[in-house]
Amino acid sequence: MLDYNEIRPHKFIVWQNEPFEVIDSHVFRKQQRKPVNQTKLKNLMTGKVVEQSFHQSEKVAEAEINKREVKYLYGNKGEFWFCEASNPAQRFQLPAPLVAEKIIYVRPNDLVEILSFNDQPIGLAVPIKVKLKVTEAAPAVRGNTAQGATKQIVLETGTTINSPLFVNEGDMVEINTETGEYVGRG
Image: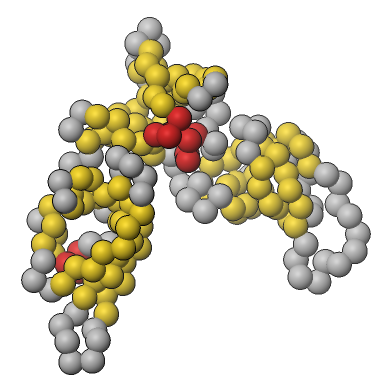
């Protein structure tokens, strides 16, 4: 069981009999009252984000999330296919809503972790930072660069992000998978 102040970002909890990931938390006191932990929780089954306050007397159970390493094979028409890392013959499919948020940073044949709760898949876990190759980048345009000019680039997975002007086609760039932002050149 977790106390109200132990409910922190990146923890998995069971609340109202469903698994949630804590996205944000802030413990504060209002005037003479007892402390409260104001949290944002993401339902791992539906993807819905809710705000919930936990008071000093409340406790929640920590969710038992199982992780299993698998290899991503390919995606086609909303279907994403994976196989066991040790046995490529054991293939299975996961629906798009379950993996669409994170799969945009994964190349075919990359190893990822599938998260499951009560033996039911609930999502993907990818590294926080990944290195991907730039497949399309417009040439840098001279002009107003006083505010840190950016341009859009396309990565080898097909994802489009903003990057500084000096990034060129063929470069390896590092991406933060939590924010979807450019971190640096790899």
